[in-house]
Each structure stands twice: as C-alpha cells, then as structure tokens.
Amino acid sequence: MSRHIPCARILRIILIALFISAIMILAPSFAIHSYAQVIPLPIDETGGIPPYKWGYQGDSGYEDPSVSVAIEHGRFEGSNWTAVRVSIQDPSQLRTLKAGRYGSTQQLTGAVMAKRVQAVLAIGGDFFAFNNYGYIVRQGKFYRNRPSGEHDVLVIDRQGDFHLLLRPDKKAIAAFEAERKEEIVNAFTFGPALIMDGEIIQNRTRAKTDGVLAQRIAFCQTGPLSYLVVYCEGPNDENSIGMGIDQFTRLVASFPGVQSAYNLDGGSSATIVFQNVKINGPRSQRSRSIGDIIYFASAWDGDKP
Image (cartoon, rainbow, N blue to C red):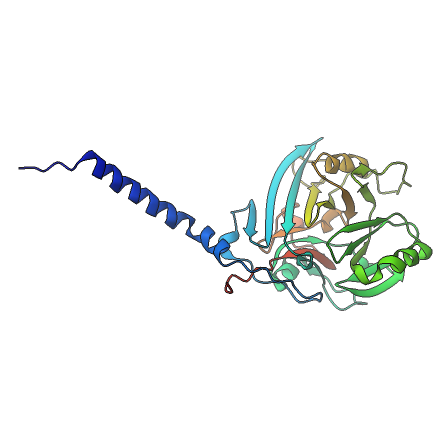
C-alpha cells in the first residue's frame, strides 16, 4: 500500500532545498563581505593587493569591499565609446606607475604594467617621459617643475581629489604648492582640462590637434573617491569616426555627476586595461607600449577578519 506524503511536508522540503541552493550560489559574495578589511596602501611604487577572483563580474566589472568597477558601452555622434565608473574606499588605491626609472624613455604595454602592480583597472598616463616640460609628480615624488604655461595640469591630492590648474606658469605652481605641497600625490601635464566644478570650460586657447578626429580618453572625478574614465574610438576602429576635443567634451559632460575632467594621452596610446588585457582600441593597436599608467588597486585583504 502506497503512503502519501503530506503536502505541507513536501512544501517544507522544497523550501529547504531552495534555501540551500541560494546559500551555495551566494557563498562567494558572503565570503567577500564577511571578512572585509580595507588596508591603506603605502604611497610608493609597490602594487596593490591581488584582486579577489570571485570579485570579477565577467567583462562588465569587478567588486570587493575596497573597490568597485562598472564598465559600459554606447555610441555618440558617430563613434563608439567605453565608460568605466570606479569607486574606492581609500585614496591610496588611486596610484601610478612608470614603465622605467625617471629620465628614461622605456615603454611597456599597459597590460604588462597593470599585471606588475596587480591593478584592478589601469589607464594610460600623460606621456611625460617623452617631454622635457611639465609639472610631474608620481606617488608623492616630485620629478619635474618646468610648466610650459601652455598645458593644463591635473593634480591629485592625498584625499584622492582632483585640482585642475589651467595653463599654469612657475608662479602659479609656486602659489599652489605654498598651500598644498604636502598634499600632492600625483600630477600630470597633458590636457586640456575639459570640465571644472561641474561646468564645461569655455573660451580656452585652442590647440592644433583639437579638431582632429581621434581616439580620446578622459579621467574624471564624480565625487569623493568616485571616478569615471571615458574613451571614444577613432577612425581606425570599425564603425567609428573619432572625435574632436569639443565633441569629446560633450560626450564626457553627458555622464551624470562629472565634477572635473582631464584629457589624457589619446590616439593609439589611449589605454584601458581590465583583467590584465587592453580592452579598447583596434586589435592592431592593443600591443602599443606606453610610458606610464594610472591605476586602481584593491586594498582588501580577505584573509584577515
């Protein structure tokens, strides 16, 4: 004679099975957040803590308790774009690396440099090694103070905040240092600055290359310890024509929350590295070597409760 299991018992068994399945699926996420310890990184050229393998969300981003990365793509006025939003817990996670010692013109691919310092995300810098001018600071070390008076400067301080100096000369740099020198961690000379205090910079002096349709990349701050990278494809990419600086500025300004935006080295040097792979630009240019990177590192040690 067959025995019938009460419906209530069957329902209870199903609910228990679903609960166990949910726990197994979410276990990595629970593990990430149960043992979170964010450790400030030293202001030097050492790298970050290795990214947590469960933190990667395919090709669309990364998250651990110290850093989140979200990658999106779109199209604007005839060109494809990539945007990356990054949030960190400690300003020391925003870092830089030179391909070689200061004074050399050594170059490496962005992917090689990113892997060397265990970067979660990296972008190309300002090509400073191939110029003899500019205001250059890297990881708290002051390397060069020869502003041209023709290039905008981006300064990043110990709080991870951006300061844009428009075409500064030595006097302007000296005035800035008089108030903030101890706070300066990194400084870049390329430009131009695109957005300041949430507004597009108007009536600036034009450069010969401003109208050239090209690959371009901008580094932006959207809030405390919150950043945005915006990249547009160029004429060497399929289905894209590239952008002049005004058009690119409009693209950058279309993203909500941009308070400061600074144009970095573009063309084939424009670089975004994620999971130690350059993810932007035509494949023929993905082995392009560059002189320096700006990168975001994890500061989470999951082994220490």
